[in-house]
Length: 116
Image (cartoon, rainbow, N blue to C red; front, side):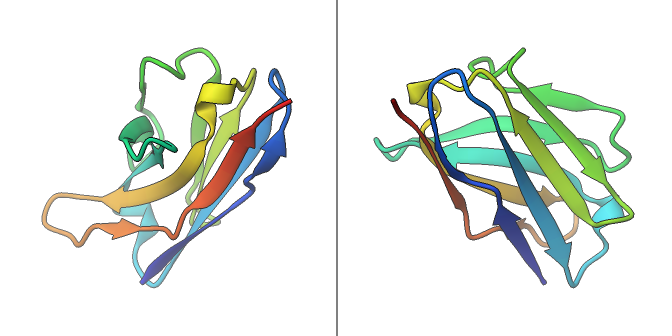
């Protein structure tokens, strides 16, 4: 089982990026999915989460109103649309799958750099 992220890169402040995380080897549709990030200062921060059916989403305070999490269970993929990016959004972004009683999986991470 694994999670594979993609979509990171370099963007100017105020720009947008979309991250994807695709699951392989387990039942994606019954797992909560989340995005976390690890900053250059090595702090891990919760970014966003989404319920298995997609009906409930939660966001960290620093990204509310700018980031949107979504999922497509037919494609085993969770997305993170990031708008109005700021330099402080620079981090390694990771997706995580979790569900009570099931193994927790993390992706390998994708780098997002916001700089002029």
